[in-house]
Image (cartoon, rainbow, N blue to C red; front, side):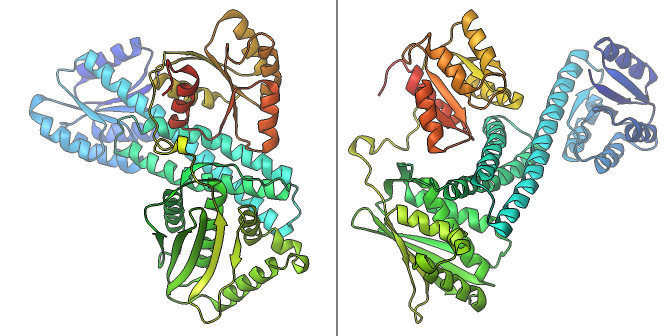
Length: 518
């Protein structure tokens, strides 16, 4: 049911449309001229407005402009005769949703109303996500400030915050991924831009929180996978450039030699190293530019030099930065505060990658040099590691257990777009009971659920089905090593980390539901 305002000077048309719309359980308001229509809109705030273009006094286009001025997201469908099509098109440029011709065909009206109400629902969902992200961001900023001021927060708090952020981002990024494959109008693209910008920023926050939690819990270890260092650093440069408030600071990047860029390494850790250092240099400088030159030495050794090209650094901040560098190279005399600072975590990561800082000479324009080691890409993975080719996959019947209803919508839409049918339940107990009644090709279980969690549900399912008979996939926001070990013990075939996109689910289905591998 929707709330609909009809503004038209023809009483017979108003009453006919009102009667037809009320038969479909819509709540209808009537305005006999534009000025009265605007007053009713302000009082009742209807979902959709049907606005005649040609009316005495103020016409429909003028009324449209006033309504859009009151609410830029108002949904207004213009009504016009055949001779007013050009005016109706002009009205759409002013913000009208669409138009219909007189005499009004009710089937056509129903179609346009359906489109408008779908748009309203999508707009509302996207606005809710946007506000949710902003609220979570404010909470996250406060936690980070508390961590920075006390330096005593237990690592489990950080782990919980990272898990929460990734869960929220999973739904948000999933919706974006689906919307990217949908035809959107100008207003919806505007929402998408806001969501994408916020999601990208908070995804970085979530990654950093994970690293902080692992560092604080003394369990920071490398997770190796094939990646392209050129793409990775370019993405970091773009991120830091895009989210710094100092627009007069620019960051540049050069890879030497240009040809070799594929390696095995921990992408999140490498991103953190370059982002942390580049952000530090941006904060030091009032204006100018910093160039990052990355050299590949001995096939696996990476050496990156950060050079000051233009402008000068704030001497006080630069001296503090260099002093902390010196302290970190002498850990016995280094305070816990410096060790647990952003720079201290960068140094810990470099040490894990068999690297370190190289302190700059006083006479050099170099701000800093770092080096670390990566692994060569195995022969079997060369030339294929970046290709996401969807193998011929049989339509599969998939069971998803997650206590987040928005996650149900996102995952169901993702997998449906790949041709699969999905049943969703809200906890592990419901998943086990559903398997008693139906057969499935795969089960995806969130690990943290009420009543029966994912681990215990997996153990009960494994008592009936082997890994070959029924693949079990753990869906979690935690990348902690003990989580991966526990999922293996519980009988899961694989783990997919939040936030997950359509590309990851394509790969998952290729792996477990393909007709044949290639």
